[in-house]
Amino acid sequence: MENLNDTLNNLFEDLEKSKISTDEIHNQLKNTFEGVENLTFEVEAEIMAFYLRESSEKTGLGYHFGSAISWQNDEGEIFDSTISELNQELVNYWEKRIKQTNNPILKSRYSGLVFEFKYPITKQKVNREVVEIYIKSLIEIVKERLCEYNFN
Image (cartoon, rainbow, N blue to C red; front, side, top):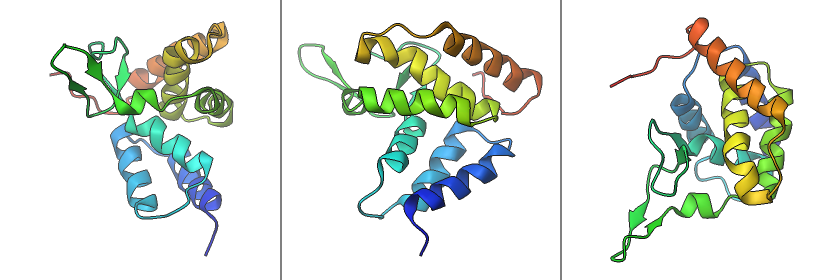
């Protein structure tokens, strides 16, 4: 049996050439690694990157990205367990992945996550290059019609 990182690399080699939504990437990751014990950091980082959902509005915690599930207590405080699991190692991994992919959908996801979470988590400013990559990859996605979006 191939190791988990080889499986992950093979999956992303196929995705490099695909027109696919981030939800479909999430589903492929979930189907590939569901029930697998002792996931590597890289696999967990990719699952987290595509588990987080983009929203046209800020989440209750004030972020553009958030998990599909969050809740509010009686005092009105909003909790999102996924956001609380984010750390500097994840942000650094996603920042590294920006340069490793040529697929604009993947590039936009990684750069968007770094743009959103680098400062709140690391207290380090986001590199201007990351912001430019984020914007350019979003423009390319729309221009090349690489992904279908529902604008309801």
